[in-house]
Image (cartoon, rainbow, N blue to C red; front, side, top):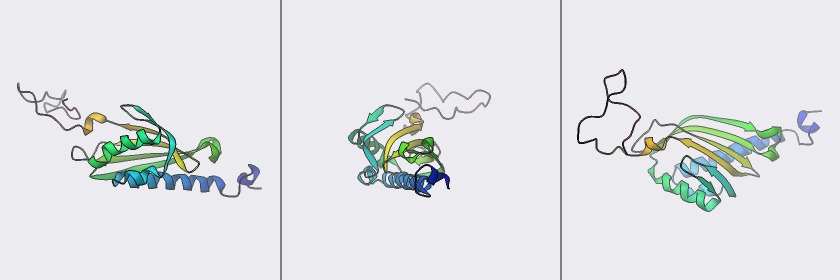
Length: 164
């Protein structure tokens, strides 16, 4: 007897659920990163919960507004990796998919972002998003009093810091 059959699942059910969840996340990500926010929402549960650097969002409407505020800034995406985890070895509990990528904008093309999605019942139910917000803020004019301070030990301008 296979492990799937012993759990009462059809053969391949956990793998099938994992592949289906991966297709959901890929479809969602492809849609929003190409500007199709409404298309991306087809993959999102009505009661989605999202934890983002600046706030938590609950519900599809708030999540749509959040994604729509950033999508127009994208000029491209650079992929790093994706990972999959079946929760408690039972697809009913959800499948976690982690994406790591470079959201490319006019300001940066090398600042990484990570998203951890939980897919349940064929929709994204949870999202945890991590990125450096400051890296996406355009640099303002430097101080009137002189050049940017040097990084310790380099003698050159500090890197990775943006002025408000």
